[in-house]
Each structure stands twice: as structure tokens, then as C-alpha cells.
Amino acid sequence: MKIQVIQAAANPAKSNEFAAPIRLERTRDTGLKHLDGTISMARLGPDTAQNNIFICVGDQPELDFGGKRNPDGQGFAAFGKVTKGMDVVRRIQSSPAQGQNLTPPIRIQRAVRLN
Image (cartoon, rainbow, N blue to C red; front, side, top):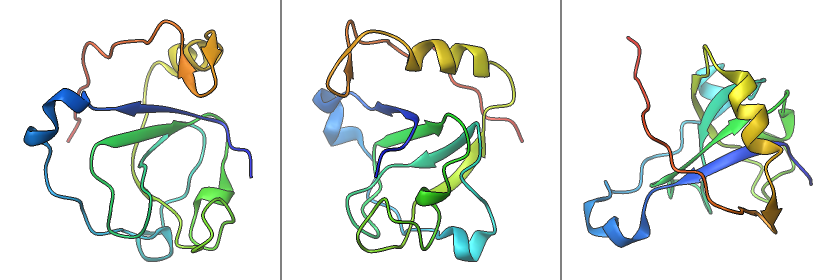
């Protein structure tokens, strides 16, 4: 199942600083959807999200509860939204890549949490 996202991971050299994996907050329960600009937690299995996030480029319903992106059908935990700068997200997505890795990698300089 192909999806359109950009994904970011924390520096693996700092894994001793990562928080513990978090409980999966299913979109079925939160009412949030994976729409254009949604920020969500990447995971391998339920309750394993830890240090990777992704941003949806376009609507991605297969990432919601019941979607087919993961065989378990549990979806991913949407938790935020890009409010400004989707043009930058789209430029990042169109950057040169080898497989799933951008070449060269793009370093995130700053992220801001709005209350």
C-alpha cells in the first residue's frame, strides 16, 4: 500500500535519550484523520511508537484505523497538523532519494509546539 508522507527519525546515536514507547491512540478513538498536513507517529506494532514521526502529503485514509497500510488495521496516532509551510513539506518530499532516504538527508532545525 503506497502512501505519500515524509518521515523523520531522531538521531539513533541518542537512543538512550528517547522516551519509552507510547500507547497507540487510534483514530477510531480520537476522531482525528490522516489528512493533508497531519503529523503522526510512525510505529511497527501497536504501542511501539517512539522516535519517528511523519507528515501526510495529501489525504492518507489508509493510515487511519481500519486502513490497510499495516496488516493489524490499527492505524497510526495522528496528533498534530502543519499550520504553515506545507510548501516546504512538498519540496522535501520531492527531494532526491535513494529508496526511502533523502540524499542528502535534511536536518530539522526547529519545531514549534503551539498550544
